[in-house]
Image 1 (cartoon, rainbow, N blue to C red):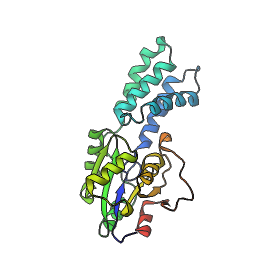
Image 2 (image 1 turned 90 degrees about the vertical axis):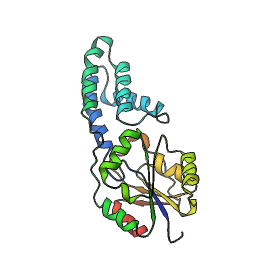
Image 3 (image 1 turned 30 degrees about the horizontal axis):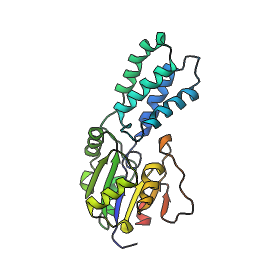
Image 4 (image 1 turned 120 degrees about the vertical axis):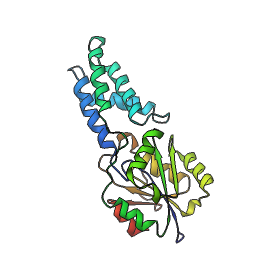
Amino acid sequence: MPDRLTLLFDADDTLWDNNVHFERAIEAWLAVVCNGRWTPEAARDELDRIEEANFRSGGVGTSAFGVHLRLAAERILPPADLAAAIPRIEAIVAAMPRGAVTLFSSVAETLDALRLRHTLGLVTRGDPAEQWAKIDASGLRDRFTHIAVVEQKVPDTYRELTARWGLDPAATVMIGNSPRSDIVPAREAGFRAVLVSHATTWRLELAEVDPDDDGVAHVDRFAQLLELF
């Protein structure tokens, strides 16, 4: 690889915690909708089906998540129980943090060291207002030469960013925790990639990564990027 690279970073669950808040909300939602007719596993599967159906059409972010919780509840609960459940579900969503972030250990220091040697970019998917609020709250905005909030992360997304930012795919690396959004499509667009382990990656973001693909590196901790770049 060239000496100077463009390193593109995912944001949620790569730079800061995100999915843990959704998992806690789902636990609270399960307590509302599981009334003896559905098991928690079956109810979660129903929610997954709804979220998967909307995965590529703006189905991310807290507001979309609230809609999905309500749609799943409508399929699970009888009408007599649904009316009482809706305000409780709305309260669960309203209590979720929006715009506040907690950086993972060593993120700021690692980015500061990397930007001395490479060009850094941020590519995050989600509700634009929420994502920009988190970017501003993180205090990391000035570390990045390029920033994009995108509707979806598919190969054409990365190809469009290549053209917009004048990137050389052979000198560009996508770094994130999501195999489905950060690794597989970036590789198809010609980038190299680094998968950063995260314990609570969203179930819908999991995907098979070719273990023999030498264009994908794996790290357990964010600071390990300094050993690669």
